[in-house]
Image 1 (cartoon, protein in one colour):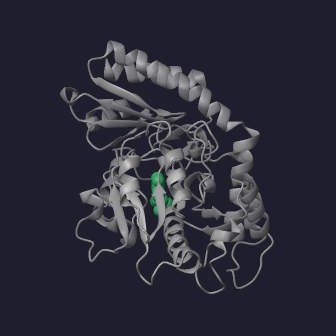
Image 2 (image 1 turned 135 degrees about the horizontal axis):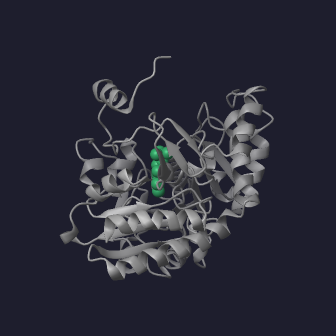
Length: 403
Ligand SMILES: *Cc1c(COP(=O)(O)O)cnc(C)c1O
């Protein structure tokens, strides 16, 4: 194969690839653990982890072994037949989430769509809401994916505008505002769907008690509570799932990203039989959902989280990283706020500092790959296998750019 350099590759992408992203100007050609490398051999620490899809680190040996071993045996059957991996993955994920049943899909957006369909169908079949009247409460500045239904209730003009006509049946209320949720509830409300921390909005952490409060409102009014843990789940925030910081037991857990171990798209909805039982044969599905290759990879991805104690490591190293960034904040006139939990961290810049993009570009030059969120926020979300020494190394670079 002909060798291309970074500039040539970016030029080719610009010509032939649709411009639906604005990537940082770096081409990744190799990766291992927290490190990635460009075609010229320059190495960088990955501080984004593919939006938390690479929690276990790039190409974790146990996950790659599961991928290769399974590829040699069986890859795809469709659900027209049973296969010998999906039952075991379903059992493992059910036990991990404490739910009775799993519905497997591929991308996060498909899992969110599955949760929406679950809440609606449960509303009609169990709660007995009048036909086509079901309402789901969602939150301002949410991010749940890119399908036409999901962007119908996005409040981000870039994600939302020009894709109508929009799917009705969603009520949008301010995040972190339990009173607004209570006011939005009516007899047709079937579900509340929430991110435990709003990642794409800029790592927005709600007040303690918000999720527990949603749980109480849901219970009192016979409404399903669905937590979108696609970005916050699988140890990212220092708990296995971010909702576990609160005294709440959500009815539906939406999973994706790191469930695929940074290797394949694997997503799922976890819930009890009384909820997921609304689906009968033929009423929902996916050709690739539950495929043996994805199931083998996902089982290995879960094992790595447990075996390598990534919950504890994210909690400890995240607290350390946040403390170091807050120390820097005291000495920098550019940083307004550092927020987050575990290794999901948002650094909010002062308006006077200039746009986040100039800093992510400067950090790239120093060997750290971060992505800005909106104009003023830099997100730090490295693979959870990062060490304290790596964080110290990264902090030197961050200090050079932000002091
Ligand atoms: C990434 C993400 C999604 C969408 O997942 P895709 O795999 O990109 O479809 C949904 N919800 C949240 C919270 C996410 O971070």
